[in-house]
Structures are given as structure tokens and as C-alpha cells.
Amino acid sequence: MIHLFSYLQFAINNLRFLGFGFVMVMASSFGQTYFIGIFGPAIRMEFDLTYTSWGGIYMVGTLASALLLPWTGQLIDRVTLPRYTACVILALAGACVFMAWVPSATLLIVAIFLLRQTGQGLMSLTGSTAMARYFPKDRGKAVGLSSIGFSIGESILPVLMVLAISIVGWRTTYSGVALATVVIVLPVAMWLLKGHHIRHQALQDQLDKEQLETDASSWSRREVLGDYRYYLLMPAVLAPSFVGTALFFHHLSLAELKGWDATWFTGSYWVYGTGTIISMLLSGPLIDRLTAVRVLPAFLMPMVAGLILVWAFDDAWWAWPYLFLFGLSSGLAFTGLTTLWAEIYGVKNLGAIKSLFYAISVFASALGPVTMGFMMDQGIPIENICLMFASYMVAASGLLWIALKAYREG
Image 1 (cartoon, rainbow, N blue to C red):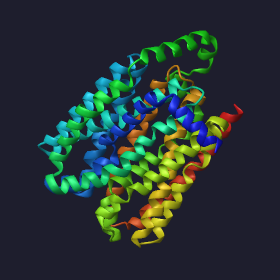
Image 2 (image 1 turned 180 degrees about the vertical axis):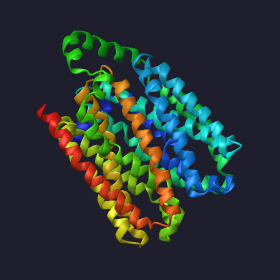
Image 3 (image 1 turned 180 degrees about the horizontal axis):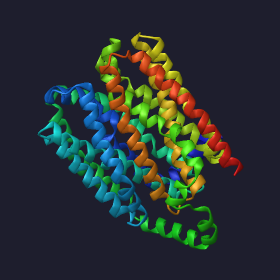
Image 4 (image 1 turned 45 degrees about the vertical axis):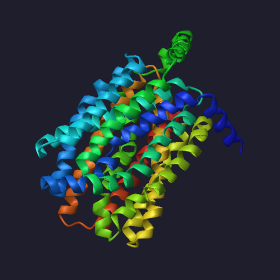
């Protein structure tokens, strides 16, 4: 009850800026894997693509985005937040237009690059970095509340897109998404940032006052790359991107192979969203009290349990616990990982450090779909693929525990 009251009070006191984070992360859906994956069957049919070739196109476009993201992402440390936000939203709208009119499979690579760079990369980076930077004492709660935007998008957009594609086609649907980005997302985000210069000046004054402490506790990106513990973290923190992206990208194929109705399955994404919201709301105050370093070690275990369910059972109703468990891990990842970087590396260069993580994460998300698509084309049963993914996550969790233990002691 105390946690609920604390959440409500915090949300009411900071409703406008939290709303900005919510809008940004929700609108990032337009370039997220689960969203693009809904268009996958229609795109594969129009361009006559196999699972592997479609996954390969997605991989190349995503890898190109990952290479550029460390540069475009670090600009958030140098450009005012309103100006940076406006540029990112307009770029996302342009990416949606390009996707709607893409004429060939070759240029589909460019479309994927633009969507992944602006949507999955910069939109979510902008929202999460703003929350972590401007709420130093309530970072967990701020990231958790704003990240509900991910869950709302994942819960309602898939079934809406499936219906829209069936009625007007995939190209017109993406054109509608571009229009909504300009007409709704841009003005709302700008209104929510009204008066942000006051908040930024307050933060700057605080950092100036604590300059010696800040300089000592804030790492540069080069220093992060020289930290061995960072590399022990990577297999686990990249697992949701690699495994989650692979599965959501091929979810309609998974449904087909399992004999599940595609519309019912995508309509069940609300279960995933529910798990994510519960996880984020519970983990936010827990992280503020105990730190992300102590909370994160087992964050992949619900996802492992979900993969085992897919491996063991075929009945469609098992999709619900599978989605719910994936949501629990995803919610903890959204909140915990964003907070973790600020905890262990400071906020002074947070944009540059987070953009590095996002770039590597995008790289992992590029490998996931094509890896899974290749295994499916080779005839490996979907159940065995899930078991292999689960085994990888268990091993990665062991390395994560070692790394976080070193941070606590070091």
C-alpha cells in the first residue's frame, strides 16, 4: 500500500515529464521488431522471400542501424532535448513513409535501417535517457512508469495492425502510422516538454555543485569499453534482444507451426503487456531501494521458463503463460538495465554509454531473426530452437551474476 501511494504521489507530481517518456517509448513501437514482424507475412508474400532471406534483409538493415547509433545516440548529450526529440520524431515519420512506398526487396534493407534507427533506436533512447537523467533519486520509478508505454504498445498495436492490414493492406497501414506520428506524436511530445529548460537548468546547477563527485563517478565511453565486467554483462543483457526479437519476429510462423490462430495469438499480446507492466511497477521501487545491481541477477529466469513451456506443450492456451513470463523478464529489463548504466557509470555521459549499449543490443536483435529463420529453414523443430535459447540464457545468467557481484565488491 505504501509503494502504491508512493507511486501515485510521484506520478502526480511529475505527470507531464513522465508522460513524455511514455509517449516516446510507445511511439518507438513503429520501429520495434514485434511491430515490423506483424507485417512480415505480407512483405514476404509480396517480394517472394523465404524465412531466411526476410530475416537476412532485417539483419542487414538492423546492423547498419547499430553501426550508426553510437554517433546519433550520443547527440542527446549535446543537443537540447526538445530539438533532439523533434528531429527524431520527424525522422521516424519519414522512415514510415519510406516503408509504405518501398518498391523492391533491395530497398527494403534501407526501410528496415530507417525504422530501426529512428524507432527502436532513437525514440526509445530519448525517452529512457531522459527519465534516467532527470530523476536521479527516483530513477527506478520513473523508468518503470514511462516504460509502460512499451507494454501498452505491445498490447494494443499488434491486433490493430493485423486488422488494418487485412482491410487496407500493409502499405496503407504504414502510411497511416506515418501520419499519426506527425499529427499526434510530435505535437503531444512538444507540449509535454514545455518548460523543460527549467528542469534542465536545475539539473545542470546540481551537477555544477557536485562537479568533483560527478567527474569521479561518471565514466566515459572509452573507460566503459576498458572495463572487463562490461563484457561479462553483455551475454545476459543482450539476451532479450537476441531471443525476444527472434521469437516476436517469427511469432506468426510460430503460431502456424503450433497450429495457433494468428489473430487470436496477436490479440493475446495483452498478456505479455500485463506481465511487463506488473514487472516494471514492482521492480521500480525495489531498484530504488536495493539498486539494480542487486535486483537484476535473475531477470532472465521467467523468460527461460516461458521457452520451456513452448518446448513442452502445443495447446494454444499455453501461449498465455509463455507471453506473461516473457513480459516479466522484459519489464525488469526495461527498468533494470536503463537504471543499471546510470548506477554503475554515472549520468554525465549517459547518452553516449546508453547509445553504445543500444547499438550492441540492436546488433543482437539483427542476428536473432535470421538465426532463427535459418534454423527453421533447416527443419529444426521450433521446440528445439526454444530449448537452445533457454540453455543460452541460463549460461548468460551465470556470467551476469559474476559481473554484478564484482560491481558490488568493487
